[in-house]
Length: 314
Image (cartoon, rainbow, N blue to C red; front, side):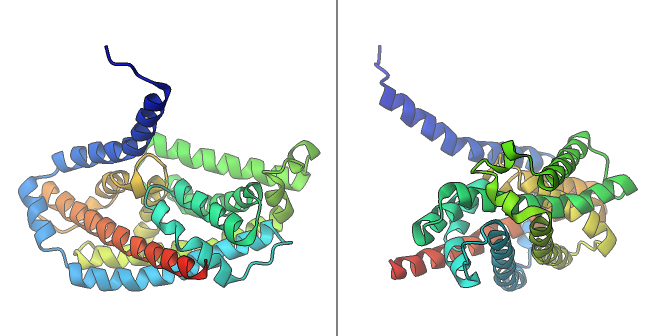
């Protein structure tokens, strides 16, 4: 009988943690692909306007990097007022973390916190608090139009989605009460202190600063859909695209791979051209896969450029 040592067990666990998200993504993608006619999907992928999509997304990613850095800078200034980082310093710490963000949002945030500690001596607990403020603001900005869409019937009913939005809304309300009340047993905790230092006004500023980033995502995907012949009116895009972004942020697969495609087909297929439901679903799946692959390549390029710039400074 083979002997399993503690070191072997630890390696197996690390391997399982590393591969599990990819297995989840593969399973979801397989299920989505199985629900679509293969010939229709192959035809839609073959007709994908990759050159135009690459140009559109390259310009959009450049704008999104600027918007993301601005939002993070506002959040860090609000949460850590005694640490005056410039937008350029935030960019230097954020850019390399885009590589980790390809795994999931949390991994990218962790990389950003690490580089804040390494380059600027910001304690890890303070960095986590500042990133927590930025993340909370991002989720609130995404959840707001989703909640409005659910209430107005613009988003198809889904119990899980309703619960997710309700949880984010309840969390935001509880956080607002806590920031206003400032109970000492919470405000004195090191991990939460940056958020209490930001207060309600700082939190509102962080949320407002995140709006350009979300607006950029909306504009990018609305334009990308049109490249694939999917005509989504702005009111429908405003109600449905944030649902996809919100589900992509759930850390169960790398960069939302799989969950993004499943949500896109469910929410957007009705707007696609095609004589049959299979043809419409195939067009949307081709759009979603193409934007995902091109987007991951572009974000990885930004991350590699950030790492190269970081190496020059060290």
